[in-house]
Image 1 (spheres, rainbow, N blue to C red):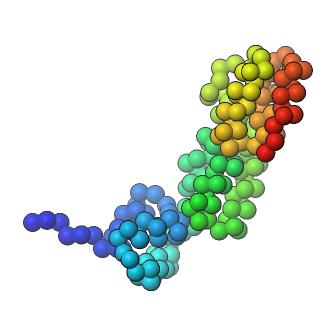
Image 2 (image 1 turned 135 degrees about the vertical axis):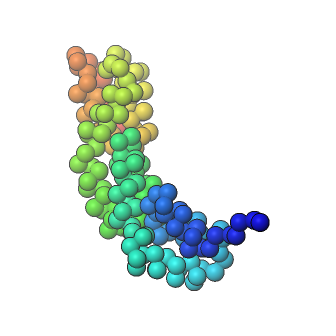
Image 3 (image 1 turned 180 degrees about the vertical axis):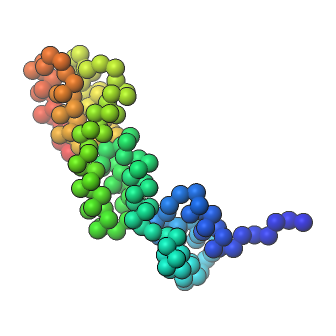
Length: 163
């Protein structure tokens, strides 16, 4: 005897059991199984009312999973794509910017064993951190900190970066 198809609410709860979702994200996933947007909205309202769907928890969960490896720009971009409200983004931005230098320093330490020895290595390390979403001023500060014997040519490299 085949298993019965799960209900829309069952699918939603299954998604939420795996990880926190934003309202927009869950609505997009449920739209694959239900064409009626009103039905989905009513279900999302019910889940929100019961506390099972919570934007603040979804934001906190996402930041917790991603911030150790990615810069503020990248994490915020992902949250925008998930449909997080501007108020929640503003609060998260402040928190991420406060810890960005320490997080960038940790990412640099995990990836590179030694400070850049020449301008090419400096540029490669800077590109790596910037591609991870760290701000250019933070990248320059991290690289200046790790350079044992500052080379004037390397300091000039940071002047070429912009956000």
